[in-house]
Image 1: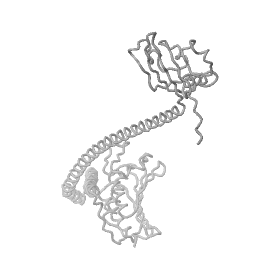
Image 2: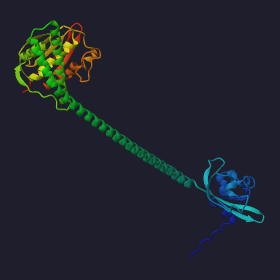
Image 3: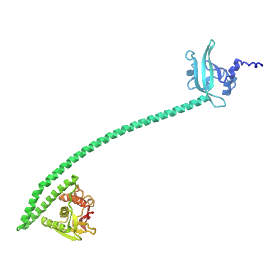
Image 4: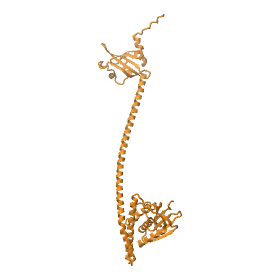
Length: 407
């Protein structure tokens, strides 16, 4: 059996030069005293241009001063530098990362450092990726923290908004309660006043009727006419207060429709108004079919309110024309016309509201204006509508249209 050839044992210097890492020795000031061939190949220089001519600090991009890192000024302060990464400067090629290990070797002739430099490109890439991932995690954590803070802020704002909404709800409930109390009180007052006015008005109307039977002087006739108009206004107030109470309470107006001759009903009301409103000129014009299903008392109330409105706000001593007209579709139309100062244009859309007041005639009673609101409600109760036109040339006309009831 052949014996293997004896292996050649490398000498220490060869081991030093051929080591897979950079090796060198420096004095206490960092001047390079010995360097191996591996490190010379890395930096692209010959040993003779390095030894005794350069310092280790010139080849390393330190992240702190050499004194702070190596602490070579006093060997007792630092005896080793282990696993520290630097960038190694090279001639003719980019610098690359290395891991530096430095050990202090005291000697009677001075202080020496034995240094090794290990290539760390893969480790550098690993650390770069690790740092990148670390930064990404930090960013995610920061975003999560920001989202959590935003959610907490949103929850706090929502809680505050809920609290404010609850406060507003309570205030609204209090306002509604106060409004309801006021409405009930006003309804009670209206009902009481309407009841209390009923008997005195009846007595006043009856007394005027008795006095008119006898012989009257012109002055007495004028006084009786004024009393009759005042009694009619008071009766309208009583009716209106009673109806306001019903509408405000949500019950609405009571209607009792029956088939009757609307022309005869209108003529009867006009005749009674002529008698009660002495001195007021009223004419009635009927046309078309008069048989319709309506509430007689409510239609009479409409005629009375519209005529009283014409007498109060129309031309003094002018003619008031009441027309009742049967429509082709079996509906019924009632209109009241008077000449005089026209209504303001902006009043045409609001005159039927309960709060309307004629600012142009503050001295005139507002009872008939409020009565127009009841006219609208009576028309609506019959399924109809009310409208008004008013010009200086054509005068003012209120028109109520009541359709035939649906079968």
